[in-house]
Image (tube, rainbow, N blue to C red; front, side, top):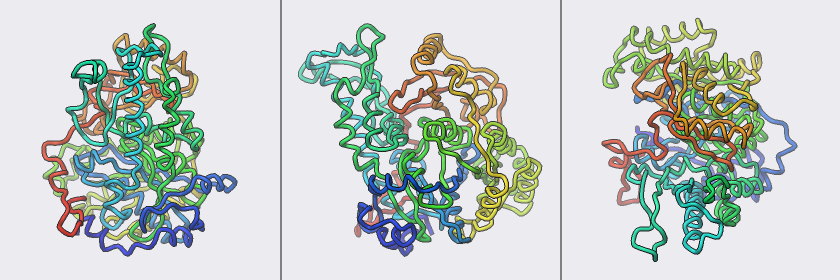
Length: 557
């Protein structure tokens, strides 16, 4: 059966009753969105502050391939399995974006018998969080143009406006546009452009804010552009925009509670896309889960070079979180792809290709151990075409690296198929719980931070940038000391070349552009040809998605 067919057969329990029975959450502290989704009240979240924290487990993966790895599926399967072996566990996931749902993925709520449900709702409009973020972002865009149109009392230089517009869809035609066409009744003529919603600074702010007050303060610190002197920043608070933006986000900031196919609880809140954003669920969701459960399983987007690095260097740094172990997801198919096998041949046994592709796994393991300083185990996400010889080779190789590898069959068997993985994770934490290290320290320059990520994590030999970009980083290092760096880079490779498989070394990482996210509290460095507004593939997943005469969604997978 397809994922959506499996999800429809699930026996969902009312979320209000489930939350009360499993986590002791009072019914009046939940805002239900129908029977199976609810938002936690901010008062309840605040009331948990005095409780001790559970143990935080990060799920990440090798570099993604068209073969699929299964990070979200593993996060759900591991969470279900921990509950099956008697541990109180909650999963913390990121909300899917409509862009990849209609572009490549066709859905992002787990898969097989390791899913969060209601699957259609989660993948489509859910509780409206992304819509609220997009509207809040575009309200600021409208206020900027309106202010200039009505006299420009703040002396904003239209040529130095840094704030684009956003939409939660892959639409390459909107990357660069011209607004104000049609003469003075329509404002003034200037270049503009769109990013996808998940790349919005408002998304990052929502993900990093501790409460509503912090959210509004961060929104006010957004730098929208500069005055005509070219130096003086103009803030969202100068436009008196942050109050209205916060009003639009007053419900979006509340964490969303849903369930798995096995009726275990999961919090889904905040943005994906660790290639162009920081790619982690919200700080508020993670901290809340840590107060509610003994074990919290969370995910970070794409490979461990992107999502895990940003989880450590941005989220943990800003929020003071302390992960205790890392689960690195790998598949035989993906490793064979890194070894040079074409997608259509991945189901055939090929030990030589698998051995070549293991370099990618090794680099990620070394990064986790040597640079993040966290204990790690490898979860082999099982596919039916994996041969015994291939699995044995992968397990032996992991042992040679000093990490345990566990075959997990949660996709086919749900939590039961990941019980060995859950037991191994608990054992790892009990005997080898880690204390993370940052890849770089706060007090070095932004250029040195970019260099540390590129050389240590990506295996690059050098980094480069145009003099103007380097000069901007130097200036921001003085103006915003301590800010971490959020790298925007292809997720398909350690390098900036998406076609470079395995673990390329000695390459150069060219920084094309830098952006200041002052409200979020970090600097974005755009490397190579990565775009913050994706495009649709030749055959988008949207062509398969439909609704039948009875109103049932089909084609999500």
